[in-house]
Length: 257
Image (cartoon, rainbow, N blue to C red; front, side, top):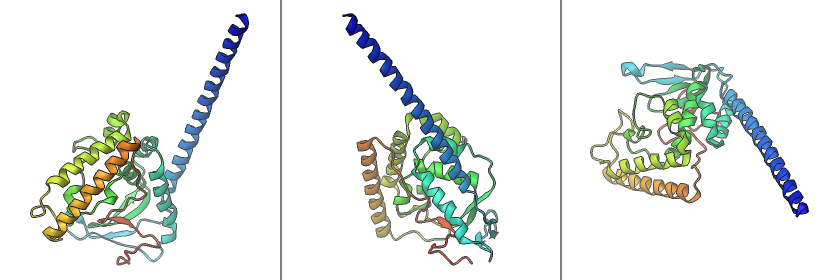
């Protein structure tokens, strides 16, 4: 019996030691992840100066970016790759991304219905949102009303909303977002829906309905993936059919010189 007690005590010490070593390993892993994410966020700061924006959307003018001759598109490659890597990090990265509020350094430019430049702070917020709304790049844009459905509109910032809801887990929040978008897509009427651009025409009704049905199938498939794996869905891009990161060496959108 004393020998058995000795063995049990020894086993307890071994388990405690293993638990302690695992805690140290987890802490080291967390520190390494934090360091990696902070480095990636630093790479979001472009070495280019922000290009000029012609026009003022607030005055109803067409807002267009004009890249100067010394704007080096190759210098945007590290920014672009940092975006992709940050989208691949797990949900713990969202807190770090949202902690970079107020970083006004130029990061990237966007070609959309209204062209605009993005600061590091705004890029971090955008990436964090895209971790939540990872399904959006997979959808056809049939109306500009399909954006901003989730999180529910309120006066609180996204950072505040995330802080109040993150304990439920990103996967659960993504399902809520998908359900809200499915509800919208199931009821939106192509005859009255706002076009994707204020100056664009509505899609022909048959095309609208076809793309809406495709969106519903995509949303259902992504929802099934999340529920089956209990893991958040990931996207590798911030681009959608209506907007894209601009000023890259390989971009297909070159009409802004």
